Image 1 (cartoon, rainbow, N blue to C red):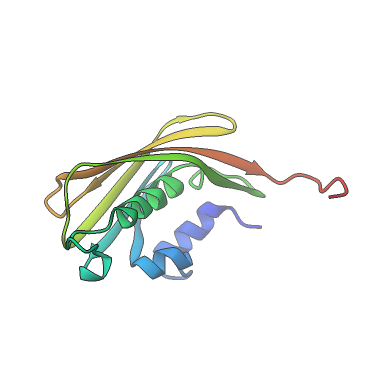
Image 2: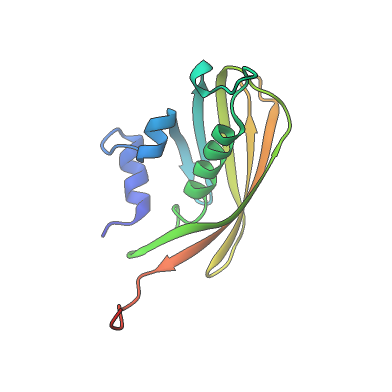
Length: 146
């Protein structure tokens, strides 16, 4: 099994499709480096709630994607994956339409758990949400009869 980093590089080159949830929402991995990721979404009325603003769950999903890609995906080894253990989002400003950018950065990377922060910005680079996540590495283990 290839490292997840290889898949991220192939996705940026257009050689691999994005995850289904990213396609559904219209978000894309714009760039990444070790411990960092930038995810973008061009928000439209289709992402809106009844008040005409981008639904909070959409902002949370974009932040979660950025934090997941920044988390251990940039450093995972053969046979490793990860899962989000916990996530908190502070919504700070309403967004109606336009480019939304989620910039995530690993704050602390332990052997098993990592702490990641993400700023979600509108097209004018104003902070619209701040998210914090804890991710956990899942290592392949023998099945031991399960």
